[in-house]
Image 1 (cartoon, rainbow, N blue to C red):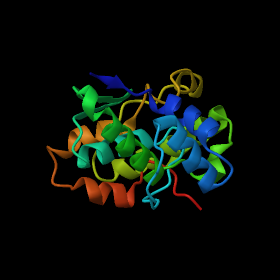
Image 2 (cartoon, helix red, strand yellow):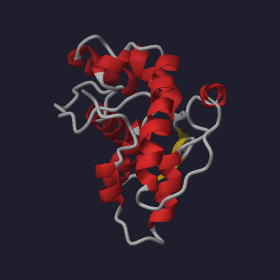
Image 3 (cartoon, rainbow, N blue to C red):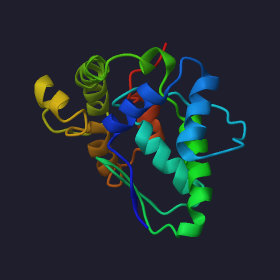
Image 4 (cartoon, rainbow, N blue to C red):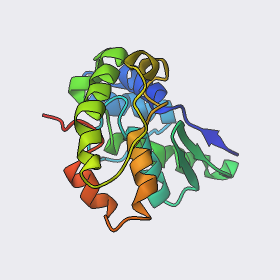
Length: 185
């Protein structure tokens, strides 16, 4: 059984409707969504922003928990999960979603506004920062094109990641100096 999760923009739309006004409400709604009757306590590892890397983090979290996950620009695909493991997968999806929630200050922001802010950050901050490492990124699309693709048609972080293997720079160093998402706060 393959499970295709929506693109990050789609995932963020879920987060804004699933994301209750408090952490407890958010977790309760996640538990209902995944059919978890007795959800375990879960600590936040990192908050994400709409249009950011939340879906990648979710995919990596699921991979760390042993699930066969493919992470692609448009979303993640969970491959070949036997039906009898669906409950375990649902629990791990609950845990990973709870570990990487959309930050509260973005949870009720219209998706277009948050994508516009993310686009501006990428163009004005991220791309110049990675250029200092010698990485090149394709020319950004217009804001209108970026919005039409819900932020998934141009992902400069993925382009940089593809160049890391042939460089002397570690991904963690780039991420530390040039976060793909505007720092919260």
